Length: 92
Image 1 (cartoon, helix red, strand yellow):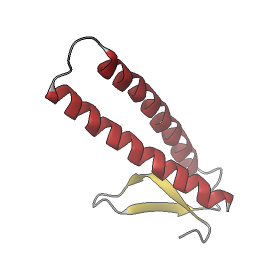
Image 2 (cartoon, one colour; image 1 turned 135 degrees about the vertical axis):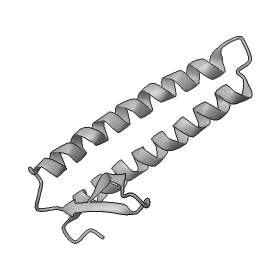
Image 3 (cartoon, one colour; image 1 turned 60 degrees about the horizontal axis):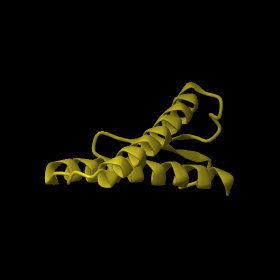
Image 4 (cartoon, helix red, strand yellow; image 1 turned 180 degrees about the horizontal axis):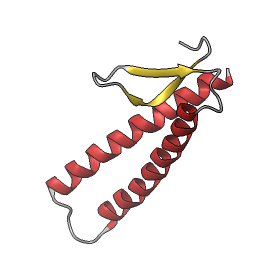
């Protein structure tokens, strides 16, 4: 769905995709989406650093620590892929 619609970096209440009119480049929702995309990407970068520290330490990470890290990495990857898709739709 690229017919002038922008994929937003958040999901609706039931997990459905949310869009805003692509004509709304300078509108409030578009600016909010731009800001949230930046926050999501920064959070993902920070999480990568934490994951690297977790697996690089001399002590063995617990299963709970690794599970928590994997869940957060999955969320960060999902967010980054949504940002990439949204930005790709606007380029093409």
